[in-house]
Length: 405
Image (tube, rainbow, N blue to C red; front, side, top):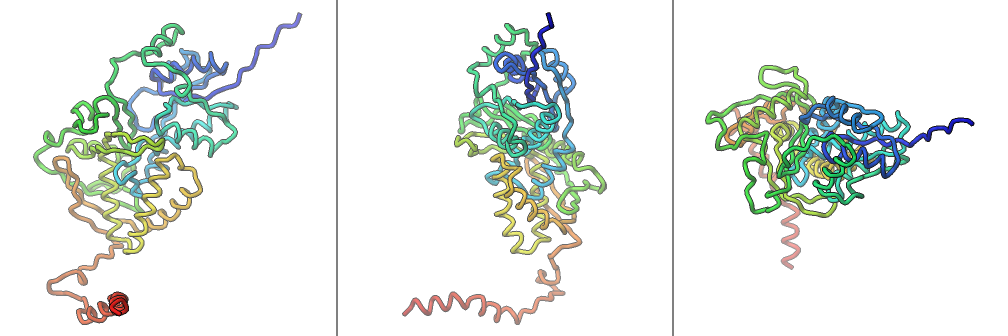
């Protein structure tokens, strides 16, 4: 009698963090969907051991496990465009988590195509923004791939998950439960849940990890010169040839040391819920404010003003998971054009929770001392002011004259 052929199972690529949720998800996907699981762990500047995550995924039962350090790609292809756009969702949040998701989705799609997987799975909950960002990004890149979100399907508490892991021989590290839900990458750290859900309650000290309490920051200010080329930072202080990744890391350290980069605000989630969010983004806030200040010196008034609206829409698209949309592509092209002459140096003073712009220079500066000065050397033609004011105010005089009738 001929041997029965072994059934070939379909494959699912799982975004694997190494934590409780995604570790349980490996076995759950095998049991509930009868799929071979390929685990993918991606580093975008967060703490943790990628190799340890890979080893754990294989031990649980994944048929394959990948680990990628995508930090450089994240900085170049996602943080860079966002910095040029001065991207701040609701004028406040520098989109650290939001802009990492399309990168992770792209890598997941690449692996799925390489492995011939029909499914991609992630560990997002039904109440958050990330489920939308993953699902929509994957659909934009590979609409033929189906998406599975275990945490939208199962009804398990943390205790239930631990019991499931025990019964199904899923090796996990059960740490003391943190009172907060956190996420971090090189561009920022987010913290929510627990006592933070009381919008009137001041965040406890343990909600912060990257920044010292401004009251405990050094009593002496520190000055940092940031050098830009075509809208991107290229160096700090005496060094004008640093990688942007190293610049971000250094500014996170300096800003955190001086207690700068803390954000506490009420945020409109994409799913329609308002949430209280705590962020730490020292480098992001320093660079965005410095970049915007340099733009004030180089861009014309109309371009600078018009770009503010483009920046807001860019931020909304990034937050809403539409990074790979045609509109985002068009906005990015406009923003890129505005950055051709954003070269120069911005001096920032770090002190007790603040980062104040105290100086700036550019070879393409539109700031002309001869025109701006009130001292000797004034080159402005004062006689032209009266004629300018007459022409400028003519429409209003016409309105007033007509309405008096």
